[in-house]
Amino acid sequence: MRILVAMSGGVDSSVVAGLLKAEGHEVVGATLQLYDHGAATSRKGACCAGQDIHDARRVADALDIPHYVLDRESRFRDAVVKDFADSYARGETPIPCVRCNQTVKFEDLVGLARDLGAEALATGHYARRVEGAAGAELHRAADPARDQSYFLFATTRAQLEFCRFPLGGMPDKAAVRAEAARLGLAVAEKPDSQDICFVPEGRYSEVVAKFRPDAAEEGEIVHLDGRVLGRHAGIARYTVGQGRGLGQASRDGDQALYVAAVEPGRRRVIVGPRAALPQAEVAVAEVNWLSAPPEGAIACQVKLRAREMPQPAMARWDAAAGVLRVTPEVPAIAAPGQACVLYDGERVLGGGFIRREAA
Image (cartoon, rainbow, N blue to C red; front, top):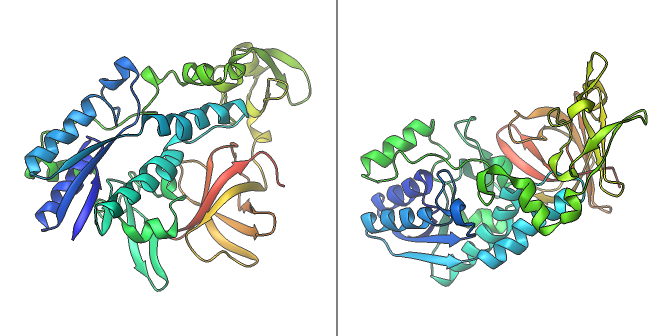
């Protein structure tokens, strides 16, 4: 069938295009140009700009498939970069990859695929699409170290029906690079994307300050008991659970201190001992269900951060309030702005964004 492949210029999406072409599909490549930050466009490990667009075009030429470049810089700036800055200004810790998937990538590329008469959109994400009794389901990748299902929780059911993730069953990244070499792709050894793609040299606080200078204003670092322990150089530099960058406020006698909360209204960073950070209940909003929304409480597993394994929890969906309330089996650190994703074994049930308090 005709399949549109989202080609970032990296090895993963290039292998997807190569594998689908080898299977006999009519493959069309599409690359989104999302930003242009001078030196950032050529730095290794980025995506969707400069050298990466050139690499995607080279792969498309090698595979003899048509290739389109779509200028989405303005939309990306408004939907992802500005949202990133606004989130920090609210005292949250955003996940720009989720917003990018939610808006620019899946929404725009699914639309393009349909316009081109394609029957599916394929990406290089490490996740599995499984046909279930009620339609397509999103499952974790075979390789837990590469699994990206956490970042795809906001994919709608209609988008999931249309999407394909050919790398989800790959045993590891080495196998993907081996496929790239077998297919003769020049990007076989290209480094993986690192950090946040649109932030030059990883200095995200500078990007935040550009759009929301208020998030870079100085303020107090305050202990949970009310004592002022020091000053900070902007709330955008801090996230719940962080222990670095606190200066003299990093310790209270012999006790190490961590960020317990960020109060944007008063520009305060609240710190306390690590034992004071875990929450018994986590409030989640902007919930997207990839399964039937539960009635009453359900037992599940939950991920509150990208780099952790799902942990046992109970979840209760308040449809009237639009709030999911999650009670981890073991109280956990939950940073507002991060994603809370629910699993039933390998399957993603749904997820949303952690909020500061239950509504």
